[in-house]
Image (cartoon, rainbow, N blue to C red; front, side):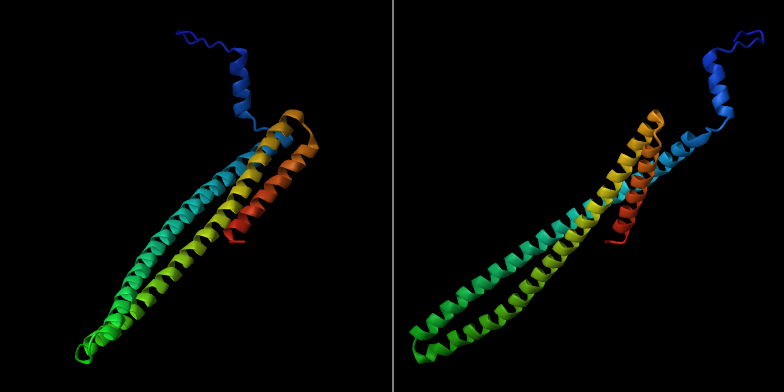
Length: 191
């Protein structure tokens, strides 16, 4: 293009203008649109897969924390048992006038151990619940990953179909895309 109002078109410019004015015709245009849709759905599935994997890790971390807290309670329970055993030994070794003091301690340790045991068992149940939630999230993550993989293969097949113009590859593209979407629906439904 010159500064005096004359415009000279090169062959590349002409093709770009022609492509901008006309929509892609035939199966190539439809396959391009389908590929864009599959890529968008695949991106959403990939995001969901990452989110469920992160959730699984968080639940597993919470399970480990609860398991540690339960272990601490069981250690506390064990220390109370040891003290109870010492009090029982003391009750057997002392004379009758001091025996009542040790028997009172034995009763106190028994009561304390009951509370500690209940708390430890509750923490173990919480840990188990978090482990189950983690396993569910990992299962769902695997479904999202399977769906994403099917869509990625479908998109690759679409590129090959466009290059080779093989109709069976187009059908394969659509079939794999539908399978990927179906697996994504299964992931969404927690199946």
